[in-house]
Length: 160
Image 1 (cartoon, helix red, strand yellow):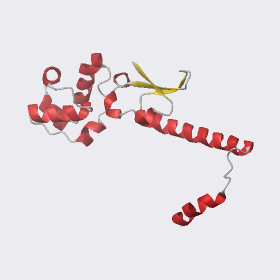
Image 2 (tube, one colour; image 1 turned 90 degrees about the vertical axis):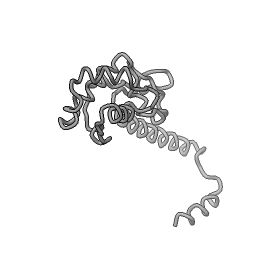
Image 3 (cartoon, helix red, strand yellow; image 1 turned 45 degrees about the vertical axis):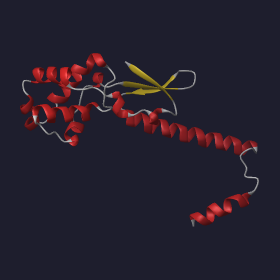
Image 4 (cartoon, helix red, strand yellow; image 1 turned 135 degrees about the vertical axis):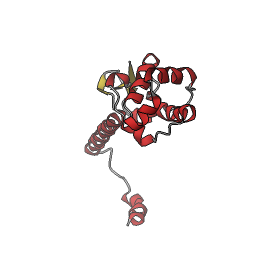
């Protein structure tokens, strides 16, 4: 499953919302998260298949973040307090992560990946470069000139 996001709007995608993205793979994702925990936590949640069944049947799915919801549920139901940093260190297979495609106005994919943070950085760099190019074109055409440089004086004084 691929989420198509217009270039320039990638930073508006909440990362935690991608956690719940593929309902058919939720069982596999929760299993991977639990199996990826350090042994000190994981051994308190065995047998893992039964634990996952309980989680999927009883855990409410209204929160934006799967990991936060899972953490609270596991603590409440099983008495296992797993810090957020531990959940964050768990690596899950790529096929369980939402694929994001950054597209141009015509719908052509500019970049695709599963790491939203990298896509955001890349999209911001692309827009910075495009803005810089547009500014240079406007300057060359004479449309980017400041007609009254005095307007900038208060800003320059404030920044000094």
